Structure formats: structure tokens, C-alpha cells
Amino acid sequence: MQPGYRPYPQQQVPPQRTPHSAGQRRGGIGPMMSSGPHHQVPLTPAQVAAQQQTQAMQVEMAKRRSRKPTDKNLPDNIDDCTVGDMAARYRDLRDFERRLDATMTRKRLDIVDSVNRSVKRWKTLRIWITNTAEDQVWQGNGLNVDSFDFSSNLEPTYRVKIEGRLLDDDDDLDKDDNSEDLKGKSDDLDRMEEDPKPKATKAPKYRFSHFFKALSVDFPSSRKGIDQSVEWKKPERAGPSSNLPAAADFDELTFKRSGDENLNVTINLYRHEEPERYAISQDLEDIVDMPEATRQEIVMGIWEYIKLMGLQEDEEKRNFRCDDLLRKAFNVETGSIPRLHEYITPHLKPLPPVKLPYTIRLDEYFHKDPQPTVYDVRVAVDDPLREKMLSFLSNAGYANMLKEAASFDEQLAIIVQAIHVSKAKHAFLTSLSEDPAIFVKDWLSSQKRDLDVIMGESVRGVDEDSTGDEWRKGGKDSVWSTINARESVTVMLSKQSVLPQR
Image (cartoon, rainbow, N blue to C red):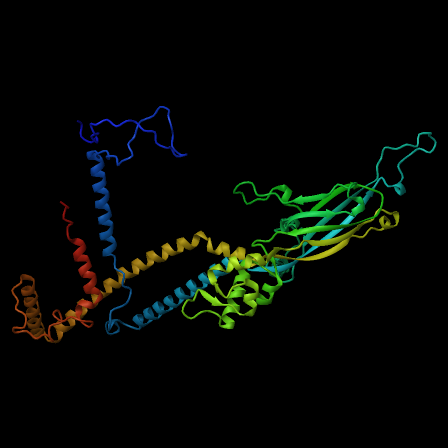
């Protein structure tokens, strides 16, 4: 029997039909694979060599990372070895850098929080409604009075136009054109006047259709069977594209109907808001004190009410006790904070449409000087700072700046390490110059003790002063707790050859 194949039992078992799941394939031509574990194909020598080379490269990269110095603090008493106050200035710069990094990180987190909260601003959407009349009796049908055929196939009709524009506020951040023009004129008063360059017309960011998801026109009950209803629903975006289709991106809507009498109609506008706002029941409005709000605003209002009234349980912080208002709204004695979304769902209703009554005038007196009917509707728009904050967070230059700062930190750590080495040399030579005989004697004694420790020939507690030898003392203030000692040990360990695994 070939190795790698599972032996089958010799006794014969009568075949049995087993139920098949919906995802299994029955019948057909294909290999019969066992459901047990399959043996892996052995690697070729080239693949084994490539794996070993990859592992060796990873080990080498880890060694290089461990050898990189990270300390950027100057050694102690460096001021005694330098000319001027350069060391003090460096420490001031380091302290300023730490405070600047903390401030930038805090501000960046504040911007992320502001973007996630999706703050809205209320602006005014002005809507003009007007109508025109065509082929009415008072307009004349163009009949020839000298002819005997007074019949006409023209039917009186009218057109109604609904147009909306978002009004600009005085405090918009985009109104910088006038200041730039004045600045350019004041730079050179003797310059000859030139023809003004035509300014590029900027497409409006918000259009009438962006604020509503549906529109309908209610005709009088007496015209239900005569006039066809007018309805518009915003189509969905096609695919991942951020551009709206043409049927959902317009500033005016026009419809045409037949008729020769004045009509009173009602135009219904259904709001489109993200996140969606809901009308709140009276029981829940007594708690959050808002007639309409988003789900997040309602949950935050309930949470603030629970904290204000001290209803959160002491042992289980996720639960809260219900007072009269909460019990009336949720019908429970003890509520759970994670289930607040479930509690508020029965109290939410879609916002009622914005109703705009309008009279379609088809008489001659009105059309001598027609005047539109104007309505102002308050709509919610994104904070103008939100777009700038998003561009700030997604700025590609920020990542490049971080990489550049990291490279500067590495170079600075290398320079500081060289300063530590120079400081150690300076201390060594200074001690040698003060009393060479005693210094050499102490140094040779220290080297001898270290050699005995390395060779394993030292006897602890015999002819040694545990308080005098800096290399034998341990603890927080010992020489082994310094940055140089730790980095030296790290370098020594990284230089050791990796033993092959058996």
C-alpha cells in the first residue's frame, strides 16, 4: 500500500443513502475527496531555502531595530562639560515638543469627535411657487372671425413651477472675494485699470431636491377623477458613485395639467435628513424636552435625564430605576441602558410633510401682473467646517510629516548616544587627570573583580566592599539602571549568533 493513503476496512458494509445538505453537490463527474485531513505536499529544496532566507532576514531586521538608540535625553551634569547654555536650551526645546505633541493629539481627537457627531446648522430654504396659463378663453384661441368654422381643438392648460434656493448667511466662511479684491486694488494705486476677469460661477453645493425625499400635490376632492396626481420620489444612487442622478439633482420642478378654473392645491414636501429625524410622542417629549430629534439625540437626552435624577443603580451600572415619567413611557420598573433603542422605537413617528398651500390662478386679472407665492422653510445642513475638518483628517501630507519627524527622531537619538559616549570619555579622563595613581589602582581593582566574576572565580563576601564597587551594586541607583548599560546589553544580546533549531 502506498504511504500517505488511509487503509480502508476489509469488511464490506452495505451501501446506505445519506441525506444531502442544500450546499452539497450530488452526482456529476468529479474527484472523490475524503472529508478527513489531507497530507501537505512536501516543499522543494528551493522553497525551503527561500523560507530560511526569509526567516534570517526577519531576524536581521529585528536585530537592527533593537540596535537603534531611542534615548533623546542628555546625560546628567552635561552642563559642566559644555560651553554656554546649549544643554538648557535643548531641554527647553524637548519640553516644548512634548507639550506641542500633546496639544496636537488632543486637537486632532477633538476634530475626529466633531466629525463623528455630525453637527448640523439651520439655514433658510426659500421656495417660490408660480403658475402660467395657456390657451385660456380670455387669451383668445386665434380663430378667424370671417370664417364659418368656430371649432377649436385647443384645450386650456396651466403650468405650475416650484423653485427653491438656499439663502446665504452673512456669517458664511466662503465670502472672501471682496476682501481679496480690495487688497489687490490697494497694492498699486498707479496701475492702469484692466478689464475685470470673469469669475467662475461656482455650482451650488445644496440644491432644492437635496432636502426632500418625496413631493406630492393634493388637488381638491372635486377634481380627484379629473386631474392626475403629481408625485415625485427621489431615486437611489446607482452603485458606489457619490453623484446623484439627474432626477434627484435639481432646483425647480414643473408640472402641466388641463383646466380653466382657479384651484386650491396643497404641496407636500417630505424631508430627507441624514441621520433621520423623528417626531416624538408626548410621553417621551416630557423626558427629553424635544418635539423632534434623531435617535442618538433621544438616547443622549434620556441618559442625561437618568444622571440628573440619580436613577442609575449603584451595583449594576447598566440598569436604571424608573420614576413616574420613565415608567409611563417604557412600562417597566427597571430599565437597561443597552436597550434604550428598543424602548424608544414605539414612540417614534416619521416627521409630517411640510405643507405649502397654493392657489392656481387662471383669471386674466392675476396674469396682468403675476406675483409668486413665497415660503421660507428651515432646513438642516452640514457645518461648513465639517468639510474642512474632513480634508484635514484625510490629508496625505500628515503621514509624510510623521515619517519625516520619525527620521529626525532617529538622527537625534544617534547624536544623543554619541554625546553619552563623549560624556563617559570626559568623565574617565577627568578622573584620571585629578589623581592618576589612585584612579589607575581603583580601575585595575574594578577590572580584576569583573574578570573574576566573568571567569567564575570570585567568592562573594570575601575582601570586597559591597558599597564601594559601582559594578556590583544593584537597585534603582546602580550603574546597571542607566541608559548606556541597558542599550549595551541589548547590543551584546543582538550580536549573539542564533543557534539552529534541532
